[in-house]
Each structure stands twice: as C-alpha cells, then as structure tokens.
Image (spheres, rainbow, N blue to C red):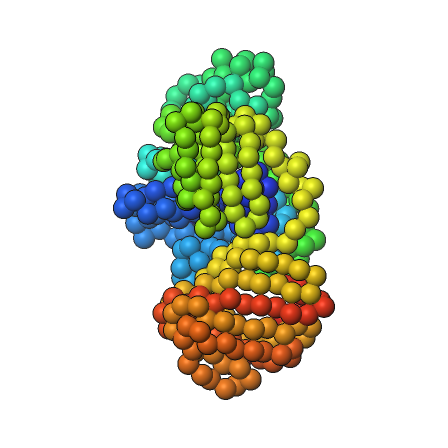
Amino acid sequence: MNFILLSGGSGKRLWPLSNDVRSKQFIKIFKNEDGIYESMVQRVYRQINASAPNSNITIATSKTQVSSIKNQLGNNVDICIEPCRRDTFPAIALAAMYLHDVKGISENDTVAVCPVDPYVEKEYFSTICELQNEAKNNSADLMLMGIEPTHPSEKYGYIIPETSDKISTVKEFKEKPDVQNAEKYISDGALWNCGVFIFKLGYIVKKAHEIIDFTDYYDLFDKYDTLEKISFDYAVVEKETNIKVMRFSGYWNDLGTWDSLTDEIPENIIGKAVLNENCENTYVINELNIPVLCMGMKNTIVSASAEGILVSEKEQSGSIKSYVDGIEQGVMFAEKSWGSYTVIDAQDESMTIKVTLNAGHSMNYHSHECRDEVWTIISGKGRTVVDGMEESVKPGDVITMEAGCRHTIFADTELQLIEVQLGREISVHDKQIFEL
C-alpha cells in the first residue's frame, strides 16, 4: 500500500513548544507502549507500519522540516521535498509525480493521502487500508474518509453523503459553518472532512497534468514556486462528480490547540514541575532544566521552552496565534538530522548554543565568513576536522575556529558541546558547505 503523509504547519498555535521549524507534529508529549515519549509524526508512522506492514510511506513536506523528520524517523525515511509552501494540491501533485517518476509506482496502484498529525487509534489506519482495497475495485475515481461528528464544530468542513450507508456517494460539500448550520448539517447526516483522500495514482497524475502545465516530476519541481496556492479540496475534490465517502465512527481528534492537546496528554506534568493541592485541571509541559511551581491554578496551561513561557487559561489558549505573530525572535530550538541545538544566550555580537550530536552523526563540513566560533566539549567523545586536520576530542577540550575556517565534528558517542559564536553579523545564512 502507498501512503502520502502531508507534513505542514507553521508552529504558531502550540507556542512555545513549536516554532517556525518545529511544528506540532514534532513535539514529544505522547507515551508509546514502552512508556517512551514520542511525537505525532512518530506515532502515526508507527501506527501505519503496524496496520499495513511493508507499506510505501512518503512524507510530503517543506525543506525546513526535513531535518526534524530525519531526526525522529531516521535517515532512510522517504521524503518528497516541496521547494516552498504552495498548499495541499501542489503538494499532493508533486508527491504523486514523485511516486510515479522517481519511485516507479504503477498508475493502477492506490494511494492514501493523510495528514501527519491526527490523534487516532489503530482502527483509523485499518479503515484507510480497507478504503484502499475498496478503491482498487470501486468505480469511484476518488474516495474520502468522513468522521462521524461528536458535536457541531466550526473548525471543519462537512461532507454530505447521499445515504447513511457505510460507503455512500457524496451529495455535496459544506465549508466551515457557524454552530447553527453545523447542527443542521449533522441532522442531515453530515460527516467531518478529515483530509483523507484515496485514489489510484493514475487519477492524480492525469489531474495534475490537466491543471498544471509540466512534463514530469523534475519539471514540476523546478516550476513549483510559480504554482497557484490552492487546496486539494478546492482544486480537485469539490469539482469531482464520481466520488464516494466511507464513514468512520472510531476515535479521531485534531489536536490543533493547547486545549485540545491536553485532552490526550497522559499526565498533568511533563518535565520539572510541582502542582500544589489547590491546582485543578492544570497542565505543565516544561522543556527547561529548571523547576516550575504552580499554586492554586485552575483550568490552566503552563508551557516553558527555549522559545518562551506560556501561562494561559485553557479556553483562551485557542487565540494564541495572533499574539505569537507579534513576537520577533529567531528559532531557539531545532532538531537536525544529526541531533539538536538550543540557544542559551543571544547578544548583538555573540550567541551561545548547546549542541547535542547523536552517536555516529556529524555536522556538515562548513565555514562562516562573518563570525568566529569556539567549541567546548562537555560530554561524549568524537573527532573534529579543522581545515583538513583531524583530532580526537573529549570533555574539557576547547576548539577555536576563526572566520573562513572550514570545520566539522563527528560524534563517536552521543556528544554535547557549547558553541559560542562571535561576530558583528551572526546569521543562519552565513554558512558555506564543502565536501570533506
């Protein structure tokens, strides 16, 4: 079976745990069967592999998320990189052409497109597998999954089926309504549109060529920044006449806000925190290595990370985005394919960063034109290469690199270092990569 997982998001609604490169699907706040914290993308990836072993899973994402995906799922994960963000139709079209032209998937094979971040149980992916089997033999060109609503929500679009059967022809679609209209849609048997699309690969290949002027995957990739920003629903789904929907009554939760996220967090405290006996319905998620004390807090969310600190009444947390948009700050924490880093201190002409490299990984061999760097090894063992000269390093060693100096570090074990950047112009764009 073939899955395309759409991984997007700008990291605003779950600030301060999320940022411009760490969207909500990468936050590790759920426990797996072994009691280890995992993220949404890790959970979904694991659930697909459990429901449909040996599936072909491709993650469609922007280049800013590639490092986080590889960090959490490994370097062998299959990724279709979008050169820039162009909404869901261009993303799905590019991923479909990637399967067709790069992976060599047959046009007769079925594909399921799913968001990467729903909170679901195994029945959800078992149903998607059932839908893929239906699509192989079904006369419909496009099949959807519709969630049976639990309440009249204004957050979702609605699918109106012709009948109440498990699989029905789609009668019409309704945009996100107000509560009054949502109640009416539900009384008419409407389903929530959860963004799951199933089709034969050849169907989308044909649609992509009808809507976009291109020759193959490589040509589409080169033209990607010129494509219209349009959703798959608008470009394809709502114009398709031969379409069916399968209703799903199992558990499904779209964790888009702090309030909804706390419904699934397994405990009230993650990280260092103390709640006194007068706290009620209060959650603390603390990524800092300092304690948080809450006293007499009710219906409250407290979240602390290198990006900042949030203290919010639960229901108020849904309006966080407009306030976060006004915060001007560089990324303070990021996961990379080789490990992670946290900014400890930022001044006009210096920046201090704690870097963790995973065992067996290394940074790119690179240089900076506008800044000097100093590394102090604080744990682990590894090797540095500075202007072609290799040396072993251990805790307490200090390595100095002047501007223009080519350098990298290899971690033989997990390795941590403090990096101090010094210069009048400190920028993530000041980096030149070389072959080693």
